Image (cartoon, rainbow, N blue to C red; front, side):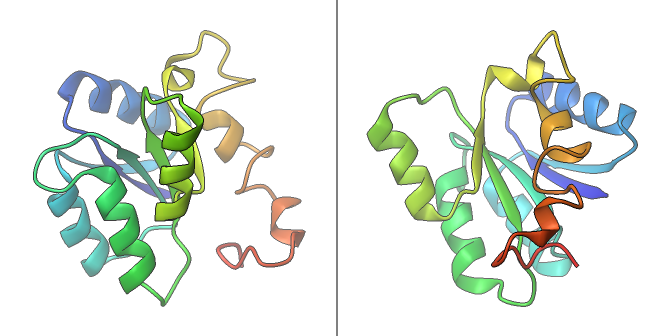
Amino acid sequence: MRILIAEDSQTQALDLRRRLEAMGHDVVVTADGLQAWNQLWDRPERLVILDWMMPVMNGLDLCRKIRDEIKSTYIYVILLTAKTHRHERLQGLSAGADDFGSSVFWCEHPGICGPSYWLTGRGPFSPAFALIPGRSMIS
């Protein structure tokens, strides 16, 4: 699967990219929300991982833009954030985020947390998830 990451921290972007590539995914990394938007406009991906706090266009604004303007396919959006307050999480969900990530992406047990949850049979890209009504991103 091809995954788009929008992350302004080069260290975090590189770490996440390496982990996802080790799982067999193709990864495209952008440094801000506007670069990510330009990539998505040219080629919508099934999964994007967005840092909430980025220059130019933050992840929350990009998430809203994705939901408002890309109708041809469903894009699963994971917001990376250190924000943990309920009202902040609700803000992310209201913008259209499907899930949140934080330090779980750097978990010591990749079989029970991090991208492997979503991408190796237990999350939204598993065959079982495809059977849930209303989840049009899975064909």
